[in-house]
Image (cartoon, rainbow, N blue to C red):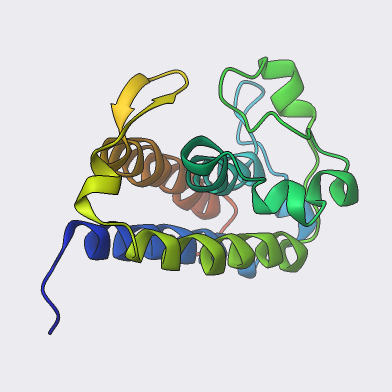
Length: 176
């Protein structure tokens, strides 16, 4: 077994997060992906989109000022969803109005992000992970904190909500 470095652990947790996003959507219909448990709730798809967009943005744009997969591959145009916004601070009415594509199509984006960012995270050394960067709305944080808090911890909170939403639809929870 390889030595458990910070980058190896971050990559492992990010991989699991994104794999759980794929699992959360793969057996749903489009209507189920767009399901909202109440008038005040975001859709199941919104939570997944927010997780994947956030991970994509943090690793590509926040860390390197490179276009995220979202822009590079034109998902915003294909799905008629916001080009820049990824859910943080979004007006509830705007968030509730978003309509997500077929789950298989959605998972194409999730898998593309996983394939793009996990190897990058694996290659990050301690010096790189220690660099302070601005992550809105969290402020100035080391890159490792951005990955642990913004991507892994925050993302898993949203995936937990999708697990509950799945049970409300009569589907299995994610076992997380």
